[in-house]
Image 1: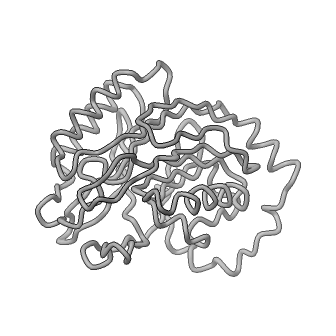
Image 2 (image 1 turned 120 degrees about the vertical axis):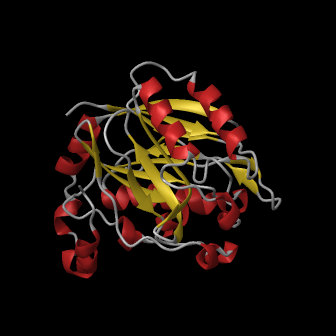
Length: 267
């Protein structure tokens, strides 16, 4: 299998201004290097982490999904990022997986951040999502999800890359970094995580710390609190060697995670 080239877009967000954010990300994506396979944007990249979902929600036919489709075609790369989506009468913090051609897939955030009131506004997702890109099996998650190891559990192994997008406040940045390293080690997978920077409309500061962690828990890329476009090549050989030389995945407790077997969406 080939290596995978991923661009992480760490950015400040215009508060609750989708037009401004789409324009800003369009400008940032002009700097993408050639040959990128996957471009990762932060959680709620079009609005910031807002609870005004009734006013800000879009449909799957709305301008943000349309913008992502067009941007993916221009870049000839898959885009991933979340937005506030209204669907089937509910409101979701929805990660959108948008290839340059083919259907849009999605993952609805399962663990809603109750300390911010997210659980009172949005509906929780009910299914994990598995996507495939150039032979890499990828599980996308959103922010608070990463605190829950059973939801991240890599049985089989079922995925090669854990993809995490976030609006993770700077006050808990050490939790962010420690959890991402732990998820890489325990699941013997690459971890790519993109967080925002700047200050939101509630006065919360975001420290960035977008990261790439290899399957041995080594941090291969870490950006502090500045806007950045980082492109990293994920080694397939490093993944396979780490699993072959230290095959802890063969001793995983499958029975304890059995309920997850009914929650797959690997299309």
